[in-house]
Length: 163
Image (cartoon, rainbow, N blue to C red; front, side):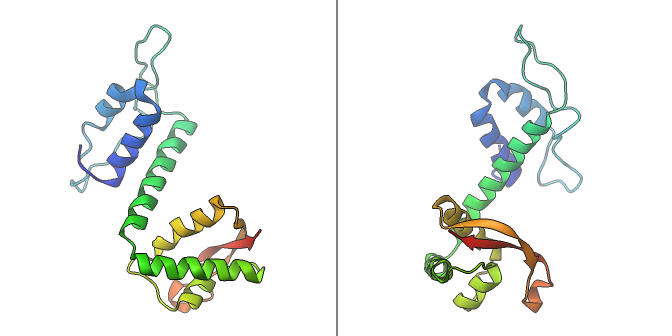
């Protein structure tokens, strides 16, 4: 299997659903991530879990199974972007997150960028750091607001409230 986000997500899904390995791999067998017109079949055709007799049923994935695959793809992408980010830049961002939390006021990624004064080649590298802050009980998502930075084109940003 080639190393790409879709197959990585499939592998993550299979780790938690080993009984589906043959069926899921069969559904992805025709997927070529390098072909422009090839897309994985994630609904309407991927087999479901085996029935009581152990025979595979030909049904689409349920919404929760789709969600599991989506979460696995997200987690794999976050792992990769975190691994590729410059450690010194991550430390500067982590210090800014801690400082913003100590102030006790809600903040967004814009505030972190302003504190740090630079963005990496991949701005999504901030995502794993914010996940870490959530996991450590430092912040909670408290809504959304538009970016204040012109080059961010007023896109919606999560608002983080320190705990």
